[in-house]
Image (cartoon, rainbow, N blue to C red; front, side, top):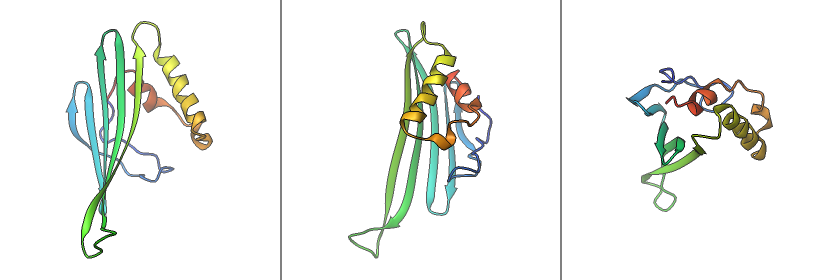
Length: 128
């Protein structure tokens, strides 16, 4: 299992540690509330038919003024997912980590290209 709380590097917008609120053998949920914004990170693993799937998800819930009725507040939500779906027989964890770095290149995230990939390697290896 990944460390609890989940440390977030200071170079990110959300630079505070996220404590775990749920732990299961193949799934962990972490949550942090900053003001009116609630961040929930879910890391989950599953296997079926010789394939291993890893889902890393970030949900952001924010209470904001309703643009149509400014006197009322509404919940505004955003979810981001990274899904790694791979063969258990042919692709190694090291290969997947290389592919993850390539994905960062496709997204033009050059500033993060040299970051330590320890947590990514742990997640790819099955930790949550």
